[in-house]
Length: 77
Image 1 (cartoon, rainbow, N blue to C red):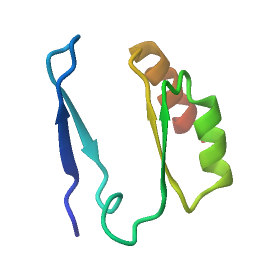
Image 2 (cartoon, rainbow, N blue to C red):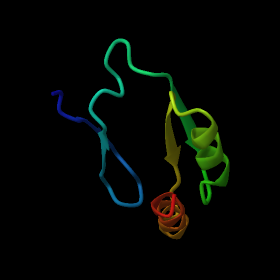
Image 3 (tube, helix red, strand yellow):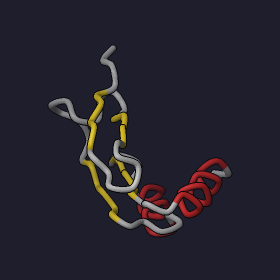
Image 4 (cartoon, rainbow, N blue to C red):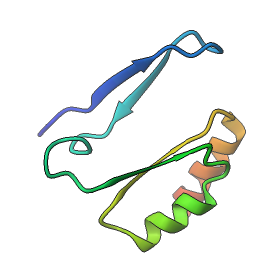
């Protein structure tokens, strides 16, 4: 079982942001990865993920309230 990869980026707001990539997402042969920058509340990428179950989707949003709304939507699925 592979462990999650950790990517550390400098963020001017928090000085450091750490993101864990789920195991298996970037290894050779992994499913395609779609990234939605500025995903707002996630409506687009959640819908796309539902229609494309063999693809990994990653939504990036800097506003915490929008991220929390997106996580609640995913939790209700």
